[in-house]
Image (cartoon, each protein chain N blue to C red):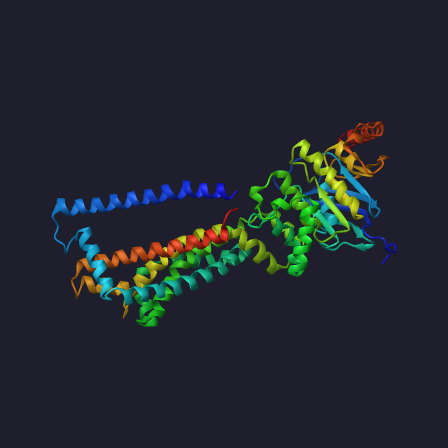
Length: 260
Length: 269
């Protein structure tokens, strides 16, 4: 059994990693080709090696670090808060049809309102500190996770619910031992989307006004510093942050959902 | 209250009637306005330790009757009594094995078997001991840490049976438990079921589609009519225990089978 599992991991992961490496190489080569062919100056489109160099130096001299740490903090809190609330609300929406009918117009409206328009308002209300970013991040995470939870809980096999009833499970036991574990794959689908959106939320919030964070650094690099390679290095940092957080969610998913 | 002293696992059904709102898709059968009558006036008494097979045409309400006894369904009329007390909900003294294994896909075999004990608040050490015992009884020791997707159909249904036995029920209700399995697996599981229940005096009410299976397992074969379901025959099986697969060739089996089939013919008409 272990041999089989191991061989399955090989077959899915190694070509996956190889494909990712090839895709990255193609992307970088295309970028480089564009720089060489068009001859754009570095302040329009810096070459990949220049960006990499600036990325290394800016991390080395502490230009990016504190900003990245702040953004990570906001994302983690925003994601935790938003996803946590969303699972609870998603469950209620799944089990109380009246709640869904009453709440869904507001949820959809909140989701349809561009976060870009909402961000300055929230920064005005909560100030330039972390609170506004956490709220924005939580807000943007909420919808996909709530919907995924609702769909997942609704899809729980009614026959399993009957089994639990025949075993005299309490309402809470049904939730914890049956509905949540059964809905977990669906919930993680929402969390995967949510975690990348959490990064977007925090950056947009910082963009609208902040004293620290990667969104602020983008504004600084583009404006007062006019350091376009730093701008690209910051974008690279944001992308890597997103990838890392996504990978963590997938890792937790593998541990919790595992082999079914 | 009115129960016999010392009687455990005695089931008594008095004038049970159940109807359903006839929704889309259920166009056949007798209907009373918008209601579909599944059972109408079922009387049945099962003595402690007796094995009764319920057989009848599709839609005769066999599974419905099982759900009434299990306390999952409240009848429109009549009462179901367990040891003389009315059934008013699922009862730990009653174990139900469904047509499908209904295992939790994210739990191992052992953990699935432990599930009812967990829900009942049994402590970890007791749970572990009981699960080990059950794994041995159903022959799944080697599959203890596997998840349901790694098990064969027969193993899954064994695990489901072990899960039902976990709380040591007085009454075992089986809803066509092995019907999804192949003939050979099914015969073997039927034999094992007899062996398992021979140890502990258990009242068994089982639903089946197979006349042969009914006779092989049961002391009595109860034939239900087509919808609305009523008891049309109650046939004693005069086959000594312990039984073996060879007994299926006995003259009494074929004679009983003829009687059951004759009543089934009436029931379907």
